[in-house]
Length: 160
Image 1 (tube, rainbow, N blue to C red):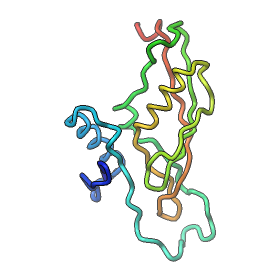
Image 2: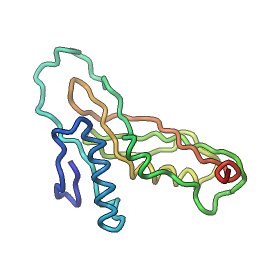
Image 3: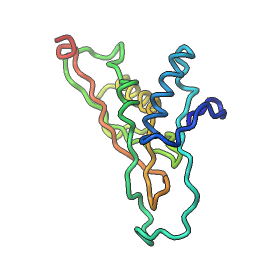
Image 4: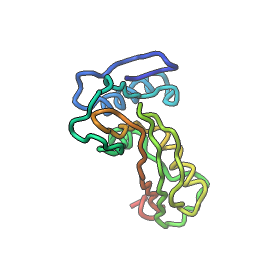
């Protein structure tokens, strides 16, 4: 569902990919509101508790990992930050993103630095704007983590 300040704006129950549908609705709502993206959140509504998991009894870990929604990555790309060295060298930051069971970001950490603090900060800020599908275990959303590489193209390649 799409939330604004705790108020439900829209639910996605019949869509094939609710996380992607919410990401698209979030982008449209932010454009309509003049870019207030930080106030809008996509969260997962957990299905009712399952008394017995017949597919994987006794298994505690996620059976499906957490994922960043492709639409969200494309709608909110991380840009080469102004003031960073425009040295023509491609740089990458690798982030570790902890995702709550409702799809919200719990924490973003720099797993591998690009060598430039501004680029690392831009990558982490971008990750906070993306929409995530939580990990799944026994058909229920659970907290999980994912590693996301963020590539910065050097100025010489970006201008071609």
